[in-house]
Each structure stands twice: as structure tokens, then as C-alpha cells.
Amino acid sequence: MFKLIFWGVRGSVPSPGKETSYFGGNTTCITIETKETFIIVDGGTGIRNVGNYVEEKGFRNIRIIFTHYHWDHLQGLPFFAPIFNPKYQIDIFGKRNVSKVLSIQMKRPFFPADYKNLPSKINHLKIKKNFTIDDIEVNTIENNHPSGCVGLKFSYRNKSVVFMTDNELSASDPVTKRAGFVEFVKDSDVFIHDSQYTEEEIEKKRGWGHSTFKEVVALADDAGTGQAIFTHHDPMRSDAILKGIVAGETKRQNKVKVSAARENLEIKIR
Image (cartoon, rainbow, N blue to C red; front, side, top):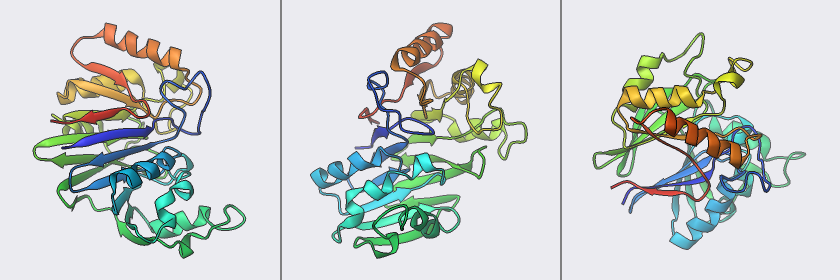
């Protein structure tokens, strides 16, 4: 079994409400799991519901990878129940002193519980370019995003999932050029990428570290993945408009299957 679940798919800020209920209003969080391993990527508000899943499945050893430290990717961690339970072993991976970054948001006057006094068993580990977590191989790439962000590829038994949140494919001064992303994504079984803006919107938001729907579809096509899953949806984007964009991209070309990530969507990679 190699499974992916989306728990939060919005960018920038939570956006609950009737107009966003289909795709969901929680900020970024996904999980990757095999029979042996359970990995959480990012701690947006979607991570709160992962706590119930962890309890139901009986996981005791949890790994959390932070792609970067913007608020919408870590603001849910204080509400992730396992960090308050001593029966859990939690390994947290991040860049540049992850323990210091996480402790800032969990101390007074911002939060009543102090991160440094949490009862769970927490280890802090630095993300390497390539590493393994039990039976899952993890490869990383530097995204084009203010203050930095890593793209992730998870491989298990010749199957792979690429998750690239917060990345500007058309950055004017890129850390990683487009050809590098094409090679990284090449032949992946599941390809998920930040698609916060339309072509019209991005003209006023160059340098903000996000991509357009068309750019992501083109990357999927060049990389030979055959599909593109849009994520990090703009908080102002209603379900109706997002569905219309997906329909338009589907009609525009037939080489790449397109869809938009939504909360509680499970994908089993066989």
C-alpha cells in the first residue's frame, strides 16, 4: 500500500465557508503512508484532523516534514493532538533550526502551551537533499519561493509521488530553472503542484512564489507524468470558479489529466 491523503489544500490563509466547502478551506497538509511508515507534510490547519486519523490507525511513530515556514504551512501544529501525548514519537524535518521556528508560535503571548515543554517525544532533524524514512525514499529540490521552500518526491517500490507547494515556475531570478523541475517530476505517478493563480492574476503577483494552472499543466506534459493535480488554491477562489478552471484546462488539451486537490481525497498508488 502506498497512499496519499489531502487534509488541507488552501494557500495563504484558511478560507472556511459555503463557497469553499467542496474543495475545503484548510491550509496545506497532506499525508503519505505505507504499511510501515506514516509521514505528514506541512502543518497547515488541515493537520488538526490528522490527529484523529493517527489515533484511529494506531500510529505511534510520526514523521513531519516542513517544506518551509510561512504561517499557512505551520499554523495548525499547535492543534495537532499527538504533540500533547507522551505515547507518540515525532520526528520533525525542516531547514534551518526547525525547533526554534516552531517554538516561536507556541509561547506566550501567542499560545498558552510552550513548545519546549510538550510531553510527546520530539526529535528535530535537518532535511537533506536525499534521505530515507523507513521504506520510503525522499528526494528534494529547491523551489522558487521567498525565504525558500523544498519540493518533495516520495518513492516506494518503483512508484513515486511529487508534491511541490509554493513554487514559481516562471520566476525571473530562479533558484532552480524549469529544466530542473522537469527532470525532478519526470515519470512520477502522482504530480501535485501549487497553482494559486490564473495567467491574468500572476501579472500583478510576480515574485510572490506561486504558479499558474497553465504553467503546471505544461510542466506535467514536458515531464511525461500524464496528470497534474492543482493545489494551494487561492483563498478567494470559490468552488464554482475552481471547478470551471479545471473544466477549461481539461478542454484545452488532452495529453494531461487535470484535477484539483480537495480535502479528504485519498489516492492509492498501485
